[in-house]
Amino acid sequence: MAEILEPDVNFIKQIRGLGGASLKVCYQCATCSTVCPLSTDDNPFPRREMIWAQWGLKDRLIKDPNIWLCHQCNDCCKYCPRGARPGDVMAALRAYCISEYAVPKFLAKWLQDKRYLPVLLAIPVIWFLFIIAVTTGFHIPKGEEIDLAEFIPVIWGVDLTFIPLSVLVIISFAMSISRFWRDMKRVNLTPEQIAARGGWLNIIITPIKEILAHQRFSKCGVKKTRFYFHFLILWGFVGLAIVTALVFFRMDILGIHGHISMKNPIKWLANLAGLSLLLGSLILLSDRISDKETPSTYFDWSLVILVLSLAVTGFLTEFLRLGGLAGLACFFYFLHLVSVFYLIAYLPFSKLAHLVYRTVVMIYERYEGGI
Ligand code: SF4
Ligand code: SF4
Image (cartoon, rainbow, N blue to C red; front, side, top):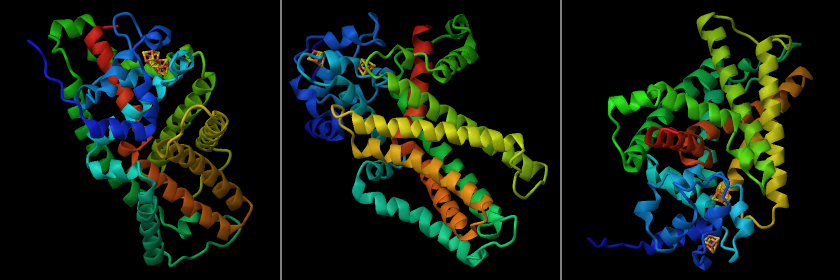
């Protein structure tokens, strides 16, 4: 039976605005699918996605796992005879997909539109100013050992801010991803079929190990730097997540408060993770500046600036505190908390949401294909 296609003209316009401006020049030669190091004979991309995007087939594209299997290495862009830049179109489709599944949707629209940046920044700024005003009254700590908790109490500035925020983020992701999974799912496996794939544990753990090792990024030919900055930034975040859990355990379970000494292994790990984040974000920044061919959208830039800001404000706070410059240390600590708030609160709506979407798709890939 013939299928009636319903092109969404507004969708095409949005994809072009999100960095996929070149999609109309594609003439379906399929060179891109042939040269893509991640595309397979059974599941070729991105040629099919290019034609769907040209036709405005939004409903097919938002649930297409392939848009997440692309790692934007740009091999296809180099060899496309029409200069259609399919890698950039795939990135634009991912940005659209994040906003389509986001809960609440308006936040994703705000994250992709620079006019809303002042509002998004004002929320954490006002929140932390309010906390400081009502708790310490902007008291700047004194003495040899500068304790930043005298400026922003940990219970208010960290625990009562970031724990509820993290819960909200988990709820938001759970709602988005469950709808995404339902839309994407083409097969329903029996318990025997799942067992044949090594069970759910194997279906979930194997892709995560692959992501941590960056096996697919290492196949990229044109953009070798993507492997390095992505690897450093990912492991920087993993390290900081472990540090956060250890600090939480130390303070809230063991009841040990106060600054962690520079000799403490938790501090070593925090500094190592921070360095990884800093180095990764600097390579990413230089890559964005030097690559004149790949269009960088506001959505891309906001991630670069955020990661850099997290690392720089974190290190400046530490150095200034150790150097005895209490006023400046408090100022950068404030900026650091604002950056962390921005990262966590807007995670399901920012480009960083790809961490979750791509992981889910790679899990689904193993679930469906058993590879
Ligand atoms: S994007 Fe380029 S390489 Fe791919 S099918 Fe279109 S014209 Fe060919
Ligand atoms: S950008 Fe790289 S991974 Fe993505 S479709 Fe093109 S060649 Fe494949």
